[in-house]
Length: 64
Image (cartoon, rainbow, N blue to C red; front, side, top):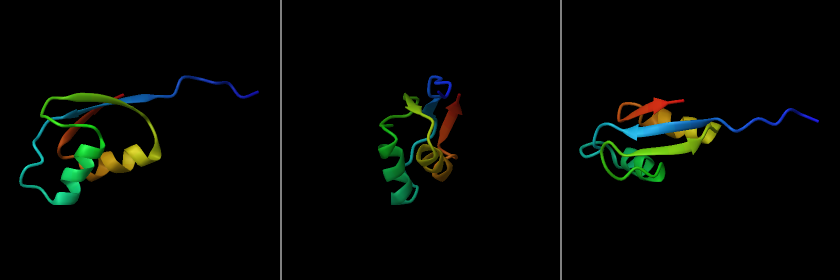
């Protein structure tokens, strides 16, 4: 049986407001669950999450 470890989590913090950025980036920030600047959300590390973070990397801070 495969060794089951806890799934890795990422802490995503919104450090810059999405105001003034394209609408798709605003929707990505909202989809990440971030609503206000300096808010931090923990997500399970998945390829889909990594793609979303890449799209708005200039607005967020990531911690493993």
